[in-house]
Image (cartoon, rainbow, N blue to C red; front, side, top):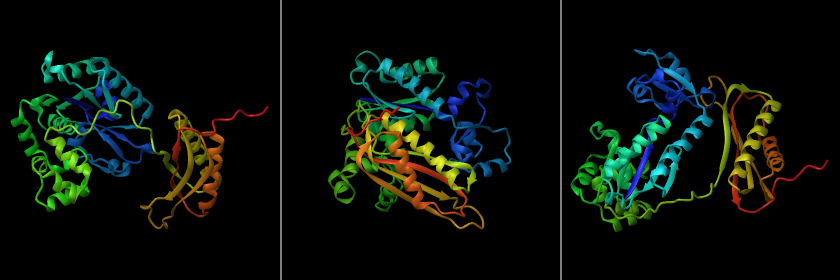
Length: 363
């Protein structure tokens, strides 16, 4: 059995932990440079606040009550995430952090000591007492069923945030899957949803009842595994050690448009320095450094410009100076005067565990 623990409205909830006066009030969190909404509390959702809504539109909305807005604070969110994951590990040592606010737990055999849903309630209480954050818990014989159970724990308030799809209650599993839209199944995105709908498969149960060989022929082995997982056949194991990253991106939307080369070069150097720090944190080296720049596609009476350039290194590196030098060389190839740049970034690719380390400066 697997459990999936997920923090409710994570970014917004983190802000509320340090502002108890906002309990029960609508909260929204904005992206870098306050560009658009990236998180909403349940109260904000009820006001019609949409994900990705631009800040300028949000300011113009006439709302029946005050919406409390925060700029994103990723250091806070990372710290709170670590606290949540540490508390979950205290009760279930075999775990896999799936995202900043989600963790899979191996709970095989736990029902010999305690009912699955009682254990889920223990997890909720332990995390709440230790961090002030509320989690939802879904449990199933496979990771995909645990994801579906977690979806159900949010859909139906009567479960109070904890729902188990145990092997002994197949009727409950079938009922939930019959109510879950196929697009809500873990790993089924918009493109697959449209194709499945065209074939008359609109619910998770209909997908589960599909022939796995047919799904493999017409879709992929990945969706075939999803079908098997929905039928209680675990195909996706717990990854206790996260796989190494394949790419590092450091970018930002500018609060004020950049129009000079020196200002853009300074920004690129900062992003390259941060990317190099992240690369060393991953204990990796890179061979490929890319830089992108672009203006706003929504700017009125302005011609859009976006471009990317890259450098391939002879020797893999994680030295900040090498990465900055390659980033500046790339910027020089795509810089055009006369534009108001809205966003830029640095991307590191082609990783390897060995290469040129940070060199000491000669004095």
